[in-house]
Length: 475
Ligand code: GLU
Image (spheres, rainbow, N blue to C red):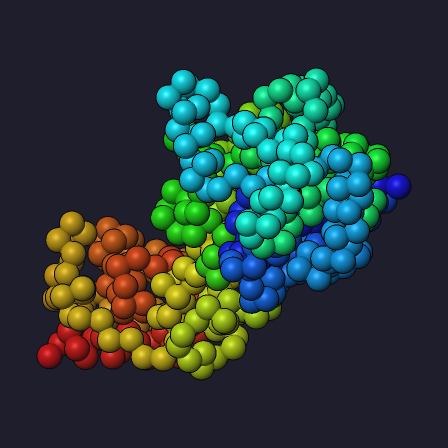
């Protein structure tokens, strides 16, 4: 039975790297008919909050990553940890350590000076019962350390193949603090064992933890799961991607959602970070079902995966163009801060905007001029490069009015045809007619094409805007 876990720590928003790890767990489980457990790893009591847990859950919902068991919270499982702790105590796999913070710091300085890796010296490893009683009498509260045995620890990583580590290189690590709190290495192994996790799939930053975890599984007499470590996400300059991405914005799922990316695009993009379907396939666009069908660990790269915002934009643009006018209009609304006075105009305008915007957060600049009144400054009509001044702009608008009035079917094609015929008749350059029309219809320097815009606005509104600007130019 395949079983994986979603084990986020609710100490902050969902990082893009976390989302990628959870997605790989999801794809692997769903592909193999396995189960997914949600477990909130909230042992860090100061930094964990219910709000962050909710945000993580919302992020999962948004990405469409559902789970089968849980939510479990580590903060509610002390009894279970206590039971296993007693077990380890009985088998002498752990021991109390009374070293003070100062003693440990001195030890570390010494190791630094000798260029040795920092590691607990093992000073309290073999305290006698009398020595322990002595410390306790003096009121000292111990931490509990795991007694790391000498010898080789090996595992066959799903991504990186065989990895091994010498027990001699791992210091006896703390599993319980002196205030009684259990620590990550211990809780994660107890939970993975209790929840019968078969595959632990996580980021490469956890590789060095895995040998410790294997030792703990063995000490608890539990089967060791398979491990797979995913390559890290990198910035374009190949530095490790941290809290912010290259654009300086938070590298979180919440930010992508708030910027108005489509979750289909984000999932497609995340899946391809460090994974490809192999077999020389050039497929780029994958639906969730497609990803589930094709996911395989053979396609996961060992090298770090570069997070490229341009590529996310490319995927988003693709999925935007696949939406119908109605879907686009519905989805874009939360991103607009002006009144929509005409639903039909919105449906057509957003379809037009979808050809150029990268995500809904940009929609405003592509849409606002379709609604309400516009009032461009007269200077905007002047464009020396196109040989347009106020007089010729007024002329252009004057000439356009009867031509547009006469267009039989108000479609992009017919509007275009009529206006181009007018340009030919006047022996002008396109820009001399189209620049003033663009400004009159949009009030902007940059906008969709004049005929597309005119169609969306409708004949009445288009003519009304042109007349109004003509009046301004003639003053
Ligand atoms: N809670 C850990 C984290 O968020 C996950 C650790 C694990 O996958 O074992 O990094």
